[in-house]
Length: 135
Image (cartoon, rainbow, N blue to C red):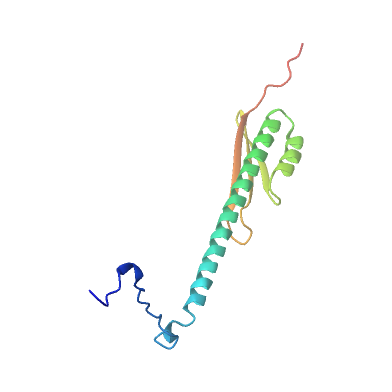
């Protein structure tokens, strides 16, 4: 047929995007609000993640301090145990030792996250070691 252009040579029909005045005024600023909300969510998530990691680290330190305190107190060295527990525990931790029959119970507690009223505790129990045997 004369006047017909083959399909390979035809140009695609381009549609122009709407101009700025064609109904986009009500969407103005929505990207800024969405970005602000996403940024706030990201900051809150990161704060929660860092707080959780710090609390887990403090928990391990409390447990280690309680274990060493119980072990040394069971051997008859409670002063040395308190000194070592104070070094191992998080800053501001409370350390206590009690005797329950043949057992020594050591407890170490500290504040988890200072603005929040959360406490982390470590508890360890050790059996009293017998005294020295006379020759």
